[in-house]
Length: 388
Image 1 (cartoon, rainbow, N blue to C red):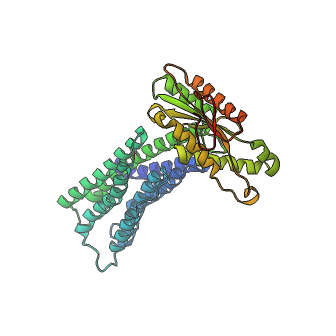
Image 2 (cartoon, rainbow, N blue to C red; image 1 turned 180 degrees about the vertical axis):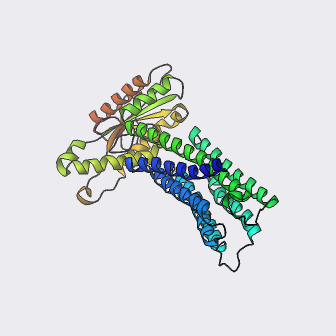
Image 3 (cartoon, one colour; image 1 turned 90 degrees about the vertical axis):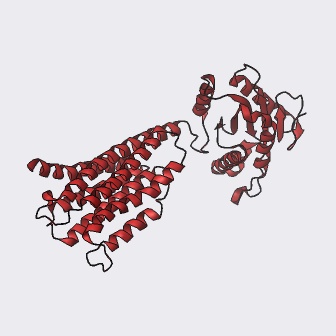
């Protein structure tokens, strides 16, 4: 019995430790929203278990407070997991918890009997998890950590389902004189401790991997436009060389007279033009492998299967840039660019295709700017046309 008592005082201590670790992560990096929610969840869970272990067995209101803390901690930990994807918690999850907390109040005229309540507590927690679990399995689980989260939540849901069945068979509602004599309390809290420990570890691992990936993305992202930078371009070329994908062609783009924008309107206006161009290119071409190569230069690496439309995509890139509308000091400014493209020939390197596309850009500049130029064509046509 002494060992069991020690266990029940270690459990809230373990949860508080998780809360402290997650809270420290949240303070260290405010972008870790998941850590913030996770810290609150484990502090609430620890307080709820401690309250349930110390309360008088016949105090219905303290028992209800412990139940509310448990349901709240379930909702909060689910919120921590969905916050990783910048998603909102499904409305059904908190709604189920709030309705159950009201119905289970000792003064509720429609509250279930003690026997039924033991089972319903498990089913309520299960019902809170299911919308999130269903939602997460519908996402593209392309990473190991996402699959790990789904498995952890599925195990938590299974735990509540098993407990619901167990308490249907043996409800143990005789209200023993001591917490540690209660089959329900012992089973419920041992299972909660194990599931909580598992979810805490998974959350810490997920947050850590997310932080590493965020730093990796930051190192390959142009801070101004959000497009890839030179390092991202180098990584894409390296991935092609390793056979992870196949680049079939290159589109190079250089804004016309961009220096004049900075000189006339200031660098902040120039930055706004670059951000607008980046958004336009994403919309026209997609978000994959578009990099800001220099001050006003952009490079697009196209997958091989998309290169049958490389001329159309290059033309569309120029069109969307010309369609940009600006306000304020830039209200009268109309952006334009020279766009060059080159198909990758045989075993030629991506660098060779980039060189040829860049040469096409400069041919366009020599012929009046505002051109779309093929690397294989001897001349350029004005506007949306492509060199013949």
